[in-house]
Length: 275
Image 1: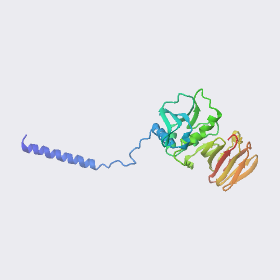
Image 2: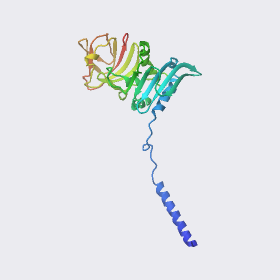
Image 3: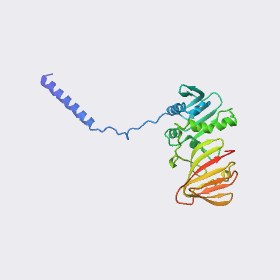
Image 4: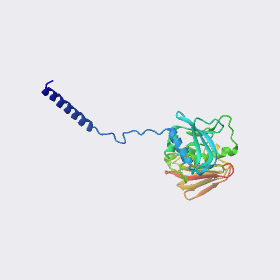
């Protein structure tokens, strides 16, 4: 090849390279909105709760249970109650327990919502009747029949394991609710003898109008914090407005409805024998 031909080829290659570089530079890099953030895996979420519970004073009480996230995996969590330096021993292994205990079954979107603070675990499990659907449930392994004392430990344990930090904070707002008894609710805390929740009753909604749920075997305090809700207690027409609290004795029929154009809100405190 003659020198002139070689120079011509070299110049052509340089020009082509510069043109390609200019075209590439003219393409804007993808923005953060265009990049998809991969969903965190179920195993990583569960590991984060185990790590948090190692710092929880309630981990001083031994407990073993399983977690199942359909299509994502199964795990066993063993809380030994043993102190190791400045934390408690909590062991996570793959697979369900081989000994009889209870199992949390959680749909992945619900697990992710709990992880993000968009829903709490007790609300995810809340329901009006035993046969109602819930995206998070507790079931007993085949052949396992817990004592009443063991059964009573599950709700408070669920609160402490699935709520991070200390002191534990329970946010409540409409986008964190589920529905039961005819309106939206967020569960605060449950243990034997105490159940607490927040209810938001939208306009024209009816609460506890199913006869099966109108009389509870324990006392109830209803603390009105917004608006006025109409009701019927033991056959008597009543109104409950914000700034007032109403006491409902055990086994007394009661139902509620919102006749206004604005949502009403109340805190429900159920307590005593049978709660």
